[in-house]
Image (cartoon, rainbow, N blue to C red; front, side, top):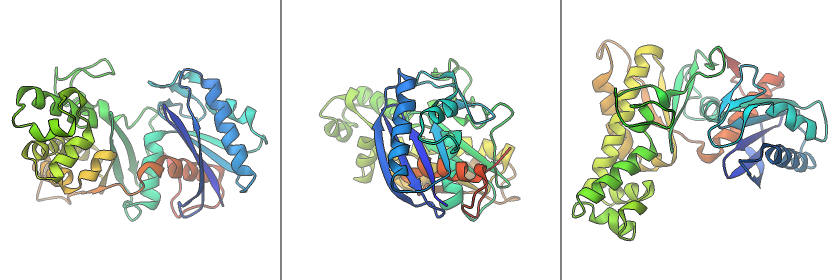
Length: 329
């Protein structure tokens, strides 16, 4: 049975028809106007209606970058789109060509995590944590085959676990959050600082950024490290250290079988994942007396939100789907 997944971002909406095996059969896109939620509703409805002219489906999953209510119908708050206690499912349904489509709203990191669990490297385990290394640090927790959402839908905000008392300030209003050390933004911040303070050692990074420390981006660091640049390798090692150390703390609470690491920085491969695994093992409680979780790269890429949202909507509607079922804790 086909389902539609919608990945709602700050600049674009990606909408795809997904089959039972997690394959996107067709994808269309619409621009986003983050300050105008009504325009987002209309754009989603327009894209879904277009796909309905070529495919039959009964369920639509909306992956939203924000805090989603426990009934999976409303976005309570979003940092980059003007959603405040916004009835997203109802508003989209009111603009669709039919009223009986089953619509589910899910946090975008949860949707991506479910895609990796249902169809990616975690498809053979029962418990996993996904960490998405982007501008911030997104997360999804799956325990005993169930997606953990918490009593109000606010669970798995892993990026805001405090790891350094009085550390770097975070956009959430606190200091020392994990995402201030284990994110693409943290990598870029440290690269810019190093280039400003040690310009000779940062010569390769500066060359890639046309000589301007302020123009350094994450891909510059990865490319420099791939080419053997000492500073680039050191910066990725530091990022990997924080990923692994934080993951060890998560294991003390949740004991997953696997960590799946997503986000563009995963293109660095073992330059990032090897120090993450080493740091994880070094900080893991009861090392030598317990299994060590695998730390592996995500496989679904930018399609994960679409695929996961569609699968969760299909499962919630009670129609046939993958061998996984989208249970909620």
